[in-house]
Amino acid sequence: MSATFGPAGNAESFPYKSSVDAPRWLGELGLDCYEYQCGKGVRVKEDTAVALGRQAQEHGVALSLHAPYFINLANPDPESQEKTIGYITSSCLVADQMGATRVVIHSGALMKRTREEAMNIALPFLRRIVAVCEDQGFGHITLCPETMGKINQLGDLDEVLRLCQVHESLIPCVDFGHLYARSLGKDEGAEAVERMLSRMESELGTDRASRFHSHFSHIEFTPNGGEKCHRTFDDNGGYGPAWEPLAQAVAERGWSPTFICESAGTQAEDALTMKRIYQSYL
Image (cartoon, rainbow, N blue to C red; front, side, top):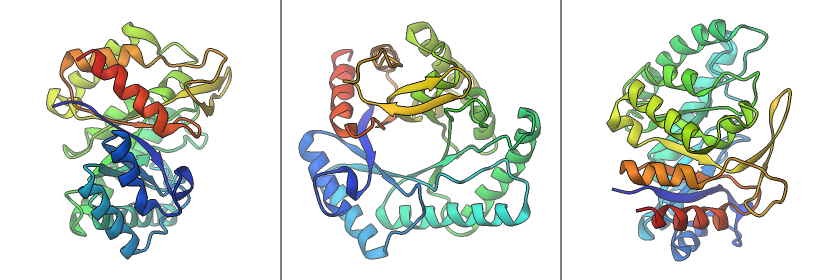
């Protein structure tokens, strides 16, 4: 088993008119996964999803899907919760049509609550979401709560691991750029990587931890808020986190996570760089 690498994107992200062609292009580049973006809403026709899935299978590209960005697990409003369930089940439907096996969901915002108050809303709500997805026939789709980049958002590593303990089917989406940004650059380097991976293993067990989903990019942050914007590997300015310590640690552990590169416009190129560096440590 080994890690897989690919970009996040949609039709506008690649040199093709249609996202249906993206898996062929990525396969030719030597990448092996792709995360389709539904951040602004789930607006994918069934025939498009099926065609994309067919291309992905033909070219050996594993698919995941990012659910709408405006999902907030910590919002207690009943109407908002019903909408959130709709966003997630719609994402699962499209993922199923594509043959995607994972759907990434944002953890949410604090909304002027303490972190524990927000978590006490999110935990039972996520449990309900998992039950609804199973009832609607999407139990085979893995939901991946994501670590968030802004300090005032729910979703540091420990919080996401607590969310994942709601149900054994849940897998964390660990965005190392987000963790770097919300820690104001402290979660960086070999020591931080080992601490984070060991924490995941102790909380979830080796099997689940070793298959974690991940986003990675260099990120610019602000001293008060955390994440400001994504950067590319070629951007000057000392943006982190460094990829090499994480690549080495995953290779040495023999883990097989999925790494989705979210660089600002060079996500496919930077995903290739990530894959080459990772393979050098095998």
